[in-house]
Every structure is written in structure tokens, then in C-alpha cells.
Amino acid sequence: MKQLITRVDDELHARLKARAEAEGRSMNDLVTEALRGVVQKGESRAEWKRRLIAEGKVAYVEPPARVVSLDEIEEFSSGWGPTVGEYLDWTRGEW
Image 1: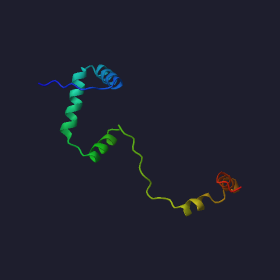
Image 2: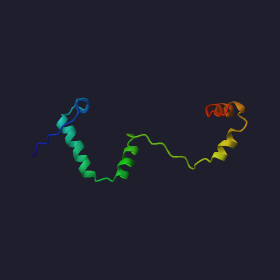
Image 3: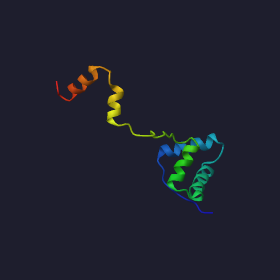
């Protein structure tokens, strides 16, 4: 068995310690399991991302099905009145 010495910032150390205590295990056990998981999985970045999303550890927002054109935005916003257009003109210095 080898001993690994590494430097971690105080915040990470405190979080590791708190998690180990919450799970009723040693910090050594927690860190060893985490490191073993990193080298055993051999995941690509895409696989890692998919796994984290599936485990609910990362929020994922589905991209829109299509990009909305400026013409569609203009058509959608027609009838909102001159207030928005006037404000935009004013912010552009066109008043």
C-alpha cells in the first residue's frame, strides 16, 4: 500500500471531512473511493457529462428545437405598441 500526499484548499478539505462524517466513514475511505472511480471508469468527457446529468448532479437545459429568426420575433412582438420601439430608439440615441 502506498500513501498519497496532496495539497487541497481548506474549503475542499472541510467539505470532504464533513461528507465523510455524514456518511460515517473515514476521509481516507471517501477519497480512495473517489480516486478509484476516476481511474476505473475510463469515461470520455461526453460520457462523464451524460452520467452526471443522469445522476441529477448537473442541471441540463434542453437547447431550443430551432433558432427563432428576427423576422419571427418582429412578427410575434407586433402590436405591443410604440413604447418598446420608442424606448429602444431612445437608448440608441435616436430621439
